[in-house]
Image (cartoon, rainbow over all chains, first blue to last red; front, side, top):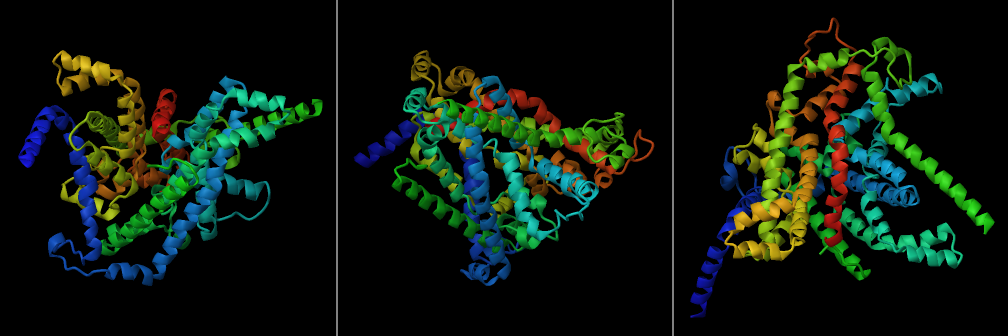
Length: 307
Length: 291
Protein backbone atom coordinates (compact mmCIF):
# COMPACT_ATOMS: atom_id res chain seq x y z
CA UNK A 1 0.00 0.00 0.00
CA UNK A 2 1.85 3.06 -1.25
CA UNK A 3 -0.47 5.57 0.47
CA UNK A 4 -0.09 3.84 3.79
CA UNK A 5 3.65 3.79 3.43
CA UNK A 6 3.56 7.50 2.61
CA UNK A 7 1.51 8.21 5.69
CA UNK A 8 3.97 6.24 7.75
CA UNK A 9 6.87 8.11 6.28
CA UNK A 10 5.22 11.44 7.10
CA UNK A 11 4.72 10.23 10.64
CA UNK A 12 8.32 9.10 10.74
CA UNK A 13 9.51 12.44 9.41
CA UNK A 14 7.41 14.33 11.93
CA UNK A 15 8.92 12.24 14.71
CA UNK A 16 12.42 12.66 13.30
CA UNK A 17 11.92 16.44 13.09
CA UNK A 18 10.15 16.80 16.45
CA UNK A 19 12.78 19.09 17.99
CA UNK A 20 13.07 21.18 14.85
CA UNK A 21 9.29 21.49 14.75
CA UNK A 22 9.36 22.69 18.33
CA UNK A 23 11.93 25.31 17.37
CA UNK A 24 9.99 26.50 14.35
CA UNK A 25 6.64 26.56 16.16
CA UNK A 26 6.77 30.18 17.43
CA UNK A 27 7.70 31.40 13.96
CA UNK A 28 4.96 29.39 12.25
CA UNK A 29 2.37 30.63 14.73
CA UNK A 30 3.52 34.19 14.18
CA UNK A 31 3.20 33.98 10.42
CA UNK A 32 -0.16 32.23 10.65
CA UNK A 33 -1.76 34.57 13.15
CA UNK A 34 -0.29 37.95 12.28
CA UNK A 35 0.40 37.58 8.56
CA UNK A 36 -1.97 35.00 7.09
CA UNK A 37 -5.16 35.24 9.14
CA UNK A 38 -5.27 38.99 8.32
CA UNK A 39 -5.16 37.97 4.66
CA UNK A 40 -8.46 36.20 5.27
CA UNK A 41 -9.61 39.44 6.86
CA UNK A 42 -9.33 40.96 3.41
CA UNK A 43 -12.79 39.51 2.83
CA UNK A 44 -14.02 42.48 4.85
CA UNK A 45 -13.65 44.46 1.63
CA UNK A 46 -16.46 42.38 0.13
CA UNK A 47 -18.73 42.68 3.16
CA UNK A 48 -20.62 45.44 4.93
CA UNK A 49 -18.64 45.01 8.11
CA UNK A 50 -19.97 46.33 11.36
CA UNK A 51 -18.06 45.66 14.56
CA UNK A 52 -21.35 44.94 16.38
CA UNK A 53 -22.41 42.17 14.02
CA UNK A 54 -18.96 40.66 13.77
CA UNK A 55 -17.14 39.27 10.79
CA UNK A 56 -19.34 36.25 10.07
CA UNK A 57 -22.72 37.96 10.33
CA UNK A 58 -21.95 41.01 8.26
CA UNK A 59 -23.67 40.77 4.85
CA UNK A 60 -21.80 40.23 1.58
CA UNK A 61 -21.87 43.18 -0.79
CA UNK A 62 -19.63 42.00 -3.63
CA UNK A 63 -17.60 44.68 -5.35
CA UNK A 64 -19.55 47.62 -3.94
CA UNK A 65 -16.57 49.14 -2.17
CA UNK A 66 -14.25 48.68 -5.13
CA UNK A 67 -16.72 50.57 -7.31
CA UNK A 68 -16.78 53.29 -4.66
CA UNK A 69 -13.01 53.66 -4.96
CA UNK A 70 -13.26 54.76 -8.57
CA UNK A 71 -16.29 56.97 -8.06
CA UNK A 72 -14.63 58.92 -5.25
CA UNK A 73 -12.67 61.94 -6.46
CA UNK A 74 -10.80 62.02 -3.15
CA UNK A 75 -9.44 58.48 -3.64
CA UNK A 76 -8.32 59.29 -7.16
CA UNK A 77 -6.47 62.33 -5.78
CA UNK A 78 -4.92 60.16 -3.06
CA UNK A 79 -3.74 57.54 -5.56
CA UNK A 80 -2.30 60.32 -7.70
CA UNK A 81 -0.47 61.81 -4.67
CA UNK A 82 0.95 58.41 -3.79
CA UNK A 83 2.28 57.79 -7.28
CA UNK A 84 3.68 61.31 -7.59
CA UNK A 85 5.57 61.21 -4.28
CA UNK A 86 6.86 57.73 -4.98
CA UNK A 87 8.00 58.49 -8.52
CA UNK A 88 9.62 61.76 -7.47
CA UNK A 89 11.55 59.78 -4.87
CA UNK A 90 12.74 57.30 -7.48
CA UNK A 91 13.60 60.09 -9.88
CA UNK A 92 15.56 62.26 -7.42
CA UNK A 93 16.56 60.29 -4.33
CA UNK A 94 17.63 57.11 -6.09
CA UNK A 95 20.23 58.64 -8.49
CA UNK A 96 21.66 60.74 -5.66
CA UNK A 97 22.67 57.56 -3.82
CA UNK A 98 24.51 56.36 -6.92
CA UNK A 99 26.31 59.67 -7.37
CA UNK A 100 27.17 59.80 -3.68
CA UNK A 101 28.59 56.27 -3.86
CA UNK A 102 30.73 57.24 -6.85
CA UNK A 103 31.96 60.32 -5.01
CA UNK A 104 32.83 58.36 -1.88
CA UNK A 105 34.55 55.76 -4.03
CA UNK A 106 36.92 58.42 -5.35
CA UNK A 107 38.24 59.17 -1.86
CA UNK A 108 41.63 57.50 -1.60
CA UNK A 109 42.30 58.05 2.10
CA UNK A 110 40.54 55.10 3.76
CA UNK A 111 40.27 56.67 7.23
CA UNK A 112 38.70 59.83 5.83
CA UNK A 113 36.38 57.73 3.67
CA UNK A 114 35.19 55.71 6.71
CA UNK A 115 34.62 58.94 8.60
CA UNK A 116 32.50 60.42 5.80
CA UNK A 117 30.56 57.17 5.47
CA UNK A 118 29.67 57.08 9.14
CA UNK A 119 28.33 60.63 8.90
CA UNK A 120 26.18 60.06 5.82
CA UNK A 121 24.77 56.79 7.25
CA UNK A 122 23.73 58.43 10.52
CA UNK A 123 20.41 60.04 9.48
CA UNK A 124 19.10 56.61 8.44
CA UNK A 125 19.04 55.57 12.11
CA UNK A 126 16.95 58.51 13.29
CA UNK A 127 13.22 58.11 13.70
CA UNK A 128 10.82 59.89 11.38
CA UNK A 129 9.53 61.81 14.38
CA UNK A 130 13.02 63.25 14.89
CA UNK A 131 13.51 64.03 11.19
CA UNK A 132 10.10 65.68 10.85
CA UNK A 133 10.73 67.44 14.18
CA UNK A 134 14.01 68.87 12.88
CA UNK A 135 12.19 69.95 9.70
CA UNK A 136 9.52 71.72 11.73
CA UNK A 137 12.11 73.46 13.91
CA UNK A 138 13.98 74.75 10.88
CA UNK A 139 11.04 75.61 8.65
CA UNK A 140 8.33 77.00 10.95
CA UNK A 141 7.42 80.66 10.74
CA UNK A 142 9.80 81.73 13.52
CA UNK A 143 12.37 79.02 12.61
CA UNK A 144 15.97 79.40 11.53
CA UNK A 145 15.39 79.48 7.76
CA UNK A 146 12.63 82.06 7.97
CA UNK A 147 14.54 84.26 10.38
CA UNK A 148 17.46 84.23 7.94
CA UNK A 149 15.08 85.08 5.10
CA UNK A 150 13.51 87.93 7.02
CA UNK A 151 16.48 89.42 8.88
CA UNK A 152 19.35 88.90 6.50
CA UNK A 153 17.76 88.75 3.07
CA UNK A 154 14.79 90.97 3.96
CA UNK A 155 12.18 88.91 2.14
CA UNK A 156 8.80 87.76 3.40
CA UNK A 157 8.72 84.59 5.47
CA UNK A 158 7.62 81.47 3.58
CA UNK A 159 4.91 79.25 5.08
CA UNK A 160 6.91 76.07 4.34
CA UNK A 161 4.81 73.75 6.47
CA UNK A 162 1.35 74.88 5.44
CA UNK A 163 1.79 75.69 1.75
CA UNK A 164 0.32 72.68 -0.09
CA UNK A 165 2.60 73.29 -3.09
CA UNK A 166 5.68 72.80 -0.94
CA UNK A 167 4.57 69.51 0.65
CA UNK A 168 6.02 67.20 -2.00
CA UNK A 169 9.38 68.97 -2.42
CA UNK A 170 9.93 68.99 1.34
CA UNK A 171 9.00 65.34 1.68
CA UNK A 172 11.42 64.42 -1.11
CA UNK A 173 14.20 66.47 0.48
CA UNK A 174 13.63 64.69 3.78
CA UNK A 175 13.98 61.31 2.10
CA UNK A 176 17.16 62.47 0.39
CA UNK A 177 18.61 63.74 3.68
CA UNK A 178 17.67 60.65 5.65
CA UNK A 179 18.26 57.81 3.19
CA UNK A 180 20.61 58.76 0.37
CA UNK A 181 23.73 58.08 2.45
CA UNK A 182 22.42 54.70 3.55
CA UNK A 183 21.44 54.00 -0.05
CA UNK A 184 25.11 54.02 -1.05
CA UNK A 185 25.94 50.92 0.99
CA UNK A 186 25.09 48.33 -1.65
CA UNK A 187 26.63 50.36 -4.47
CA UNK A 188 29.86 50.75 -2.51
CA UNK A 189 29.92 46.99 -1.98
CA UNK A 190 29.55 46.43 -5.72
CA UNK A 191 32.28 49.00 -6.37
CA UNK A 192 34.73 47.32 -4.02
CA UNK A 193 34.31 44.14 -6.06
CA UNK A 194 35.76 45.68 -9.21
CA UNK A 195 39.21 44.34 -10.05
CA UNK A 196 41.91 47.08 -9.92
CA UNK A 197 43.44 45.53 -13.04
CA UNK A 198 40.61 46.92 -15.11
CA UNK A 199 41.52 50.45 -14.05
CA UNK A 200 45.23 49.85 -14.59
CA UNK A 201 44.55 48.62 -18.12
CA UNK A 202 42.34 51.64 -18.78
CA UNK A 203 45.03 54.03 -17.55
CA UNK A 204 47.56 52.42 -19.89
CA UNK A 205 45.08 52.89 -22.74
CA UNK A 206 44.98 56.57 -21.81
CA UNK A 207 41.45 56.68 -20.36
CA UNK A 208 40.67 59.68 -18.14
CA UNK A 209 38.98 59.28 -14.74
CA UNK A 210 35.62 60.17 -16.25
CA UNK A 211 36.02 57.63 -19.04
CA UNK A 212 37.02 54.99 -16.49
CA UNK A 213 33.87 55.78 -14.57
CA UNK A 214 31.75 55.49 -17.70
CA UNK A 215 33.27 52.30 -19.08
CA UNK A 216 34.25 50.36 -15.96
CA UNK A 217 32.53 51.67 -12.84
CA UNK A 218 28.99 52.21 -14.10
CA UNK A 219 28.72 48.86 -15.94
CA UNK A 220 29.84 47.18 -12.70
CA UNK A 221 26.96 48.86 -10.88
CA UNK A 222 24.37 47.98 -13.53
CA UNK A 223 22.91 44.86 -11.96
CA UNK A 224 22.72 46.41 -8.49
CA UNK A 225 20.95 49.43 -9.96
CA UNK A 226 18.47 47.27 -11.85
CA UNK A 227 17.62 45.10 -8.82
CA UNK A 228 17.15 48.06 -6.49
CA UNK A 229 15.07 49.88 -9.08
CA UNK A 230 12.81 46.84 -9.41
CA UNK A 231 12.38 46.65 -5.65
CA UNK A 232 11.53 50.32 -5.56
CA UNK A 233 9.10 50.14 -8.50
CA UNK A 234 7.35 47.25 -6.86
CA UNK A 235 6.76 49.50 -3.86
CA UNK A 236 5.54 52.43 -5.91
CA UNK A 237 2.24 52.34 -4.02
CA UNK A 238 4.15 52.92 -0.75
CA UNK A 239 5.32 56.44 -0.27
CA UNK A 240 6.48 56.21 3.33
CA UNK A 241 3.70 56.03 5.87
CA UNK A 242 5.14 57.49 9.09
CA UNK A 243 6.88 60.34 7.31
CA UNK A 244 3.78 61.45 5.41
CA UNK A 245 1.52 60.96 8.42
CA UNK A 246 3.76 63.17 10.56
CA UNK A 247 4.01 65.85 7.87
CA UNK A 248 0.26 66.09 7.22
CA UNK A 249 -1.77 68.96 8.63
CA UNK A 250 -5.17 70.41 7.71
CA UNK A 251 -3.55 72.78 5.21
CA UNK A 252 -1.66 70.27 3.07
CA UNK A 253 -4.12 67.37 3.24
CA UNK A 254 -5.12 67.67 -0.39
CA UNK A 255 -1.66 67.35 -1.91
CA UNK A 256 -0.18 65.23 0.85
CA UNK A 257 -2.68 62.50 1.69
CA UNK A 258 -1.47 59.13 0.36
CA UNK A 259 -3.08 55.67 0.25
CA UNK A 260 -1.71 54.50 3.60
CA UNK A 261 -2.70 57.62 5.51
CA UNK A 262 -6.07 57.62 3.75
CA UNK A 263 -6.71 54.04 4.90
CA UNK A 264 -5.87 55.09 8.46
CA UNK A 265 -8.18 58.11 8.45
CA UNK A 266 -11.06 56.22 6.82
CA UNK A 267 -10.63 52.89 8.57
CA UNK A 268 -9.40 53.56 12.07
CA UNK A 269 -10.55 57.12 12.69
CA UNK A 270 -13.89 57.01 10.90
CA UNK A 271 -14.48 53.26 11.47
CA UNK A 272 -15.24 52.73 7.79
CA UNK A 273 -13.59 49.30 7.93
CA UNK A 274 -14.84 47.73 4.72
CA UNK A 275 -14.07 50.68 2.48
CA UNK A 276 -10.61 51.16 4.01
CA UNK A 277 -9.87 47.45 3.60
CA UNK A 278 -10.92 47.66 -0.05
CA UNK A 279 -8.55 50.59 -0.63
CA UNK A 280 -5.76 48.71 1.17
CA UNK A 281 -6.39 45.57 -0.88
CA UNK A 282 -6.44 47.56 -4.10
CA UNK A 283 -3.06 48.99 -3.13
CA UNK A 284 -1.61 45.59 -2.20
CA UNK A 285 -2.70 43.91 -5.42
CA UNK A 286 -1.34 46.67 -7.65
CA UNK A 287 1.93 46.43 -5.70
CA UNK A 288 2.09 42.66 -6.14
CA UNK A 289 1.43 42.93 -9.89
CA UNK A 290 4.10 45.62 -10.20
CA UNK A 291 6.76 43.51 -8.46
CA UNK A 292 5.99 40.50 -10.66
CA UNK A 293 6.07 42.61 -13.83
CA UNK A 294 9.26 44.44 -12.83
CA UNK A 295 10.92 41.12 -12.03
CA UNK A 296 10.04 39.81 -15.47
CA UNK A 297 11.37 42.96 -17.05
CA UNK A 298 14.67 42.54 -15.21
CA UNK A 299 15.01 39.00 -16.49
CA UNK A 300 14.40 40.24 -20.02
CA UNK A 301 17.36 42.59 -19.56
CA UNK A 302 19.46 39.58 -18.64
CA UNK A 303 19.54 40.22 -14.91
CA UNK A 304 18.84 37.67 -12.21
CA UNK A 305 15.74 39.32 -10.81
CA UNK A 306 14.48 38.91 -7.27
CA UNK A 307 13.34 35.31 -7.47
CA UNK B 1 49.29 63.95 -19.93
CA UNK B 2 50.19 66.84 -17.68
CA UNK B 3 46.97 68.63 -18.52
CA UNK B 4 44.69 65.69 -17.75
CA UNK B 5 46.27 65.12 -14.34
CA UNK B 6 45.69 68.79 -13.58
CA UNK B 7 42.01 68.30 -14.44
CA UNK B 8 41.94 65.30 -12.18
CA UNK B 9 43.36 67.34 -9.32
CA UNK B 10 40.54 69.85 -9.78
CA UNK B 11 38.00 67.03 -9.87
CA UNK B 12 39.42 65.58 -6.69
CA UNK B 13 39.30 68.91 -4.88
CA UNK B 14 35.73 69.61 -6.01
CA UNK B 15 34.72 66.11 -4.94
CA UNK B 16 36.26 66.60 -1.50
CA UNK B 17 34.61 69.96 -0.99
CA UNK B 18 31.21 68.63 -2.05
CA UNK B 19 31.45 65.65 0.27
CA UNK B 20 32.48 67.87 3.14
CA UNK B 21 29.46 70.09 2.46
CA UNK B 22 27.19 67.04 2.47
CA UNK B 23 28.67 65.91 5.78
CA UNK B 24 28.05 69.37 7.25
CA UNK B 25 24.43 69.24 6.07
CA UNK B 26 24.01 65.98 7.97
CA UNK B 27 25.62 67.26 11.17
CA UNK B 28 24.52 70.89 11.27
CA UNK B 29 20.97 70.22 12.54
CA UNK B 30 22.39 68.40 15.57
CA UNK B 31 24.87 71.11 16.40
CA UNK B 32 22.16 73.76 16.13
CA UNK B 33 19.68 71.78 18.22
CA UNK B 34 22.35 71.04 20.79
CA UNK B 35 23.28 74.71 21.10
CA UNK B 36 19.74 76.01 21.38
CA UNK B 37 18.82 73.37 23.96
CA UNK B 38 21.52 74.74 26.29
CA UNK B 39 20.85 78.41 25.63
CA UNK B 40 18.89 81.03 27.53
CA UNK B 41 15.78 82.65 26.13
CA UNK B 42 17.53 85.92 25.39
CA UNK B 43 20.24 84.20 23.38
CA UNK B 44 17.61 82.25 21.44
CA UNK B 45 15.69 85.41 20.61
CA UNK B 46 18.66 87.62 19.83
CA UNK B 47 20.81 85.51 17.55
CA UNK B 48 19.93 83.81 14.30
CA UNK B 49 22.82 81.42 14.22
CA UNK B 50 23.45 79.86 17.57
CA UNK B 51 26.30 77.48 16.90
CA UNK B 52 27.60 77.20 20.43
CA UNK B 53 25.74 77.91 23.67
CA UNK B 54 26.87 81.13 25.30
CA UNK B 55 25.99 80.56 28.91
CA UNK B 56 25.00 76.88 29.22
CA UNK B 57 21.51 76.93 30.72
CA UNK B 58 20.19 73.49 31.66
CA UNK B 59 16.62 74.51 32.57
CA UNK B 60 15.14 72.71 29.57
CA UNK B 61 16.73 69.42 30.61
CA UNK B 62 15.76 69.82 34.27
CA UNK B 63 12.22 70.54 33.16
CA UNK B 64 11.93 67.54 30.83
CA UNK B 65 13.62 65.08 33.15
CA UNK B 66 11.34 66.25 35.95
CA UNK B 67 8.30 65.27 33.92
CA UNK B 68 6.68 61.98 34.94
CA UNK B 69 5.21 61.54 31.48
CA UNK B 70 8.59 61.86 29.76
CA UNK B 71 10.33 59.45 32.13
CA UNK B 72 7.45 56.98 31.88
CA UNK B 73 7.58 57.06 28.08
CA UNK B 74 11.30 56.57 28.17
CA UNK B 75 10.80 53.46 30.33
CA UNK B 76 8.09 52.14 28.02
CA UNK B 77 10.45 52.48 25.08
CA UNK B 78 13.38 50.89 26.92
CA UNK B 79 11.13 48.00 27.96
CA UNK B 80 9.70 47.48 24.48
CA UNK B 81 13.16 47.71 22.94
CA UNK B 82 14.74 45.16 25.29
CA UNK B 83 11.89 42.65 25.42
CA UNK B 84 10.96 43.20 21.77
CA UNK B 85 14.48 42.66 20.49
CA UNK B 86 14.84 39.52 22.60
CA UNK B 87 11.63 38.11 21.13
CA UNK B 88 12.69 39.15 17.62
CA UNK B 89 15.97 37.29 17.96
CA UNK B 90 14.47 34.16 19.50
CA UNK B 91 11.64 33.89 16.97
CA UNK B 92 13.81 34.74 13.98
CA UNK B 93 16.80 32.55 14.82
CA UNK B 94 14.82 29.44 15.79
CA UNK B 95 12.75 29.63 12.64
CA UNK B 96 15.73 30.43 10.42
CA UNK B 97 17.69 27.50 11.84
CA UNK B 98 14.85 25.02 11.34
CA UNK B 99 14.51 26.18 7.76
CA UNK B 100 18.13 25.37 7.01
CA UNK B 101 17.60 21.77 8.11
CA UNK B 102 15.67 19.55 5.77
CA UNK B 103 12.51 20.04 7.85
CA UNK B 104 9.17 18.73 6.59
CA UNK B 105 7.36 21.32 4.47
CA UNK B 106 10.49 23.44 4.18
CA UNK B 107 9.84 24.72 0.66
CA UNK B 108 6.23 25.61 1.34
CA UNK B 109 7.14 27.53 4.50
CA UNK B 110 9.87 29.44 2.68
CA UNK B 111 7.43 30.35 -0.07
CA UNK B 112 4.85 31.56 2.44
CA UNK B 113 7.48 33.70 4.16
CA UNK B 114 8.63 35.21 0.86
CA UNK B 115 5.06 35.90 -0.14
CA UNK B 116 4.54 38.12 2.91
CA UNK B 117 7.35 40.36 1.63
CA UNK B 118 5.48 40.84 -1.64
CA UNK B 119 1.96 41.14 -0.28
CA UNK B 120 0.51 42.00 3.08
CA UNK B 121 -3.06 42.14 4.30
CA UNK B 122 -2.87 45.84 5.08
CA UNK B 123 -3.53 48.01 8.08
CA UNK B 124 -7.20 47.31 8.81
CA UNK B 125 -7.19 43.48 8.85
CA UNK B 126 -3.96 43.55 10.86
CA UNK B 127 -5.49 46.01 13.32
CA UNK B 128 -8.52 43.75 13.73
CA UNK B 129 -6.32 40.70 14.43
CA UNK B 130 -4.31 42.64 17.01
CA UNK B 131 -7.59 43.61 18.62
CA UNK B 132 -9.02 40.07 18.45
CA UNK B 133 -5.90 38.57 20.03
CA UNK B 134 -6.34 40.94 22.96
CA UNK B 135 -3.20 43.00 22.46
CA UNK B 136 -4.96 46.33 22.09
CA UNK B 137 -3.80 48.82 24.70
CA UNK B 138 -1.04 46.51 25.87
CA UNK B 139 2.68 46.96 25.26
CA UNK B 140 2.70 43.51 23.63
CA UNK B 141 0.95 45.17 20.68
CA UNK B 142 4.26 46.87 19.94
CA UNK B 143 6.16 43.59 20.15
CA UNK B 144 4.21 40.54 18.97
CA UNK B 145 2.84 41.83 15.63
CA UNK B 146 6.40 42.61 14.50
CA UNK B 147 8.03 39.54 16.06
CA UNK B 148 9.71 38.50 12.80
CA UNK B 149 10.84 40.58 9.88
CA UNK B 150 10.55 38.17 6.94
CA UNK B 151 13.46 39.93 5.30
CA UNK B 152 15.77 39.40 8.28
CA UNK B 153 14.56 35.82 8.55
CA UNK B 154 15.64 35.05 4.99
CA UNK B 155 19.03 36.71 5.50
CA UNK B 156 19.59 34.82 8.75
CA UNK B 157 18.76 31.55 6.96
CA UNK B 158 21.52 32.37 4.49
CA UNK B 159 23.90 33.03 7.36
CA UNK B 160 23.14 29.71 9.07
CA UNK B 161 23.66 27.88 5.77
CA UNK B 162 27.21 29.21 5.77
CA UNK B 163 28.06 27.31 8.96
CA UNK B 164 29.90 24.08 8.02
CA UNK B 165 27.60 21.07 8.15
CA UNK B 166 30.33 18.89 9.68
CA UNK B 167 29.77 20.65 13.00
CA UNK B 168 26.09 19.69 13.08
CA UNK B 169 26.89 16.14 12.03
CA UNK B 170 29.55 15.76 14.69
CA UNK B 171 27.10 16.94 17.34
CA UNK B 172 24.45 14.53 16.01
CA UNK B 173 26.89 11.62 16.34
CA UNK B 174 27.60 12.72 19.88
CA UNK B 175 23.89 12.24 20.55
CA UNK B 176 22.78 15.87 20.67
CA UNK B 177 19.23 16.68 19.58
CA UNK B 178 18.33 19.60 17.34
CA UNK B 179 17.58 21.97 20.20
CA UNK B 180 20.96 21.22 21.78
CA UNK B 181 22.73 21.64 18.45
CA UNK B 182 21.00 24.96 17.91
CA UNK B 183 21.73 26.37 21.35
CA UNK B 184 25.21 24.93 21.91
CA UNK B 185 26.73 24.83 18.44
CA UNK B 186 24.91 27.20 16.11
CA UNK B 187 24.10 30.16 18.38
CA UNK B 188 27.62 30.61 19.80
CA UNK B 189 28.96 30.67 16.24
CA UNK B 190 26.38 33.26 15.20
CA UNK B 191 27.18 36.02 17.66
CA UNK B 192 28.15 38.57 14.97
CA UNK B 193 24.95 37.94 13.03
CA UNK B 194 22.84 38.06 16.20
CA UNK B 195 24.48 41.36 17.17
CA UNK B 196 23.81 42.85 13.73
CA UNK B 197 20.16 41.78 13.62
CA UNK B 198 19.66 42.62 17.28
CA UNK B 199 20.82 46.16 16.67
CA UNK B 200 18.62 46.56 13.62
CA UNK B 201 15.60 45.26 15.48
CA UNK B 202 16.42 47.43 18.52
CA UNK B 203 16.71 50.61 16.45
CA UNK B 204 13.38 49.71 14.87
CA UNK B 205 11.72 49.42 18.29
CA UNK B 206 13.31 52.56 19.62
CA UNK B 207 12.21 54.61 16.61
CA UNK B 208 8.75 53.16 16.13
CA UNK B 209 6.03 55.71 16.43
CA UNK B 210 2.92 54.65 14.62
CA UNK B 211 2.09 51.35 16.32
CA UNK B 212 1.90 53.33 19.56
CA UNK B 213 -0.67 55.66 18.04
CA UNK B 214 -2.57 52.81 16.44
CA UNK B 215 -2.74 50.33 19.29
CA UNK B 216 -2.41 52.27 22.56
CA UNK B 217 -5.05 54.63 23.93
CA UNK B 218 -3.61 55.07 27.39
CA UNK B 219 -1.08 57.96 27.47
CA UNK B 220 0.75 56.20 30.32
CA UNK B 221 1.76 53.52 27.82
CA UNK B 222 2.88 55.79 25.01
CA UNK B 223 6.42 55.26 23.78
CA UNK B 224 8.83 58.17 23.64
CA UNK B 225 8.31 58.91 19.94
CA UNK B 226 4.61 59.62 20.49
CA UNK B 227 5.45 62.10 23.27
CA UNK B 228 8.21 63.60 21.15
CA UNK B 229 5.75 64.24 18.35
CA UNK B 230 3.47 66.12 20.72
CA UNK B 231 6.33 68.17 22.10
CA UNK B 232 7.91 69.13 18.79
CA UNK B 233 5.58 68.63 15.83
CA UNK B 234 2.23 69.39 17.47
CA UNK B 235 4.08 72.16 19.30
CA UNK B 236 2.58 71.56 22.73
CA UNK B 237 5.62 70.93 24.92
CA UNK B 238 4.03 71.88 28.21
CA UNK B 239 0.82 69.97 27.65
CA UNK B 240 2.73 66.86 26.59
CA UNK B 241 4.98 67.03 29.62
CA UNK B 242 2.13 67.51 32.04
CA UNK B 243 2.68 71.23 32.56
CA UNK B 244 4.60 70.78 35.80
CA UNK B 245 7.20 73.31 36.93
CA UNK B 246 9.44 71.02 38.91
CA UNK B 247 12.69 72.55 40.08
CA UNK B 248 12.58 75.38 37.56
CA UNK B 249 11.34 78.77 38.67
CA UNK B 250 9.53 79.62 35.45
CA UNK B 251 8.75 77.46 32.45
CA UNK B 252 11.79 77.32 30.17
CA UNK B 253 11.22 78.63 26.62
CA UNK B 254 9.37 76.07 24.48
CA UNK B 255 12.08 76.14 21.79
CA UNK B 256 14.78 74.93 24.13
CA UNK B 257 12.44 72.28 25.59
CA UNK B 258 11.70 70.96 22.11
CA UNK B 259 15.33 70.73 21.14
CA UNK B 260 16.33 69.14 24.43
CA UNK B 261 13.58 66.56 23.94
CA UNK B 262 14.86 65.68 20.47
CA UNK B 263 18.37 65.21 21.77
CA UNK B 264 17.28 63.12 24.76
CA UNK B 265 15.17 60.83 22.56
CA UNK B 266 18.02 60.44 20.06
CA UNK B 267 20.82 60.04 22.58
CA UNK B 268 20.61 56.23 22.87
CA UNK B 269 20.88 55.91 19.08
CA UNK B 270 23.86 58.23 19.04
CA UNK B 271 25.48 56.23 21.83
CA UNK B 272 25.04 52.81 20.24
CA UNK B 273 25.82 54.11 16.76
CA UNK B 274 29.59 53.45 16.91
CA UNK B 275 28.92 49.84 17.95
CA UNK B 276 26.14 49.55 15.45
CA UNK B 277 28.37 50.66 12.65
CA UNK B 278 30.83 47.84 13.06
CA UNK B 279 28.04 45.35 12.54
CA UNK B 280 25.48 46.79 10.17
CA UNK B 281 27.59 46.74 7.02
CA UNK B 282 28.12 43.03 7.62
CA UNK B 283 24.42 42.52 8.24
CA UNK B 284 23.40 44.23 5.01
CA UNK B 285 26.05 42.43 2.98
CA UNK B 286 24.99 39.03 4.29
CA UNK B 287 21.73 39.46 2.44
CA UNK B 288 22.93 41.15 -0.67
CA UNK B 289 25.70 38.76 -1.59
CA UNK B 290 23.69 35.57 -1.56
CA UNK B 291 20.21 37.12 -1.72
